[in-house]
Length: 384
Image (cartoon, rainbow, N blue to C red; front, side, top):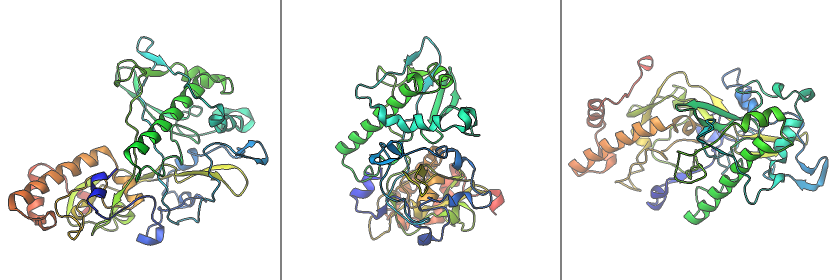
């Protein structure tokens, strides 16, 4: 979340920059799917994280006066490429099992509201000629999740398709919220996701073949502290991002600009989950914000991007909420990279402490020598 950074009065931002601000093409609003027009550079999966065409957004189909269904914004999405303060969606990464002796069946939440899942029902009902197998051509064609296999008949289950575990548009206040308000946001996410899983497994409006598959799964008796098998750690994909003397951008991820003071490498594709759900110009519901664009090769991450400006703070390292644009952070924000940057931060801190100097005054060549001594990878052969 970058709370220490914010408390130290270090400059930061959150949300999406405009493409114009840093000369990018994949940042900002993606309302007209401009990310899909870049001649194959962006994954077609962005299509598959949206609704089937023709899903009505109103409580009473076709009746605007009935109001929008839950979790649909009444605002226009904004101009393509423009910036905003909206945050890519969060979810709980579930550990599920189909082992009968370890499985806890999904339970219907106490305050379950069927209307919260009306868009899910309508999305299945909008399948071409009723054939739900033809709705999507990515992953499992009928299940709205990624159910990656793990040892012991368990999974790492994540968001996929148009209506899934991502609670789109319900986290905008999280970066600046108090701890009490954050707990409220977390509880709303948990209630939504518990309700989603029960709905997929047991609600009669879900196609039978979907219910048959989902109901085989459940949370695990031997995972996490709670008796219901649900974890309490919400997946915060992105919140605050520092703004320092060096801002990592799309140009870094693409290898157009190469940082000369590397403290680690990034390699994951530039990725953003959806940020908003709105009514498009045709009067149907649409998600917006998903970008999936691969990088050509691992690229260096600048030391200056993990330290604040010297005029703001001289003894703080920020290896997670580092100085990067929204789209560059989408590539950097992988746990292995955070571990790499954490180790590099510790080594830089050690040098600064031993020499009694500010972090900004650590000689890069000395830092580089120490990083290499501890087997950090600072360059990629193909980038030389």
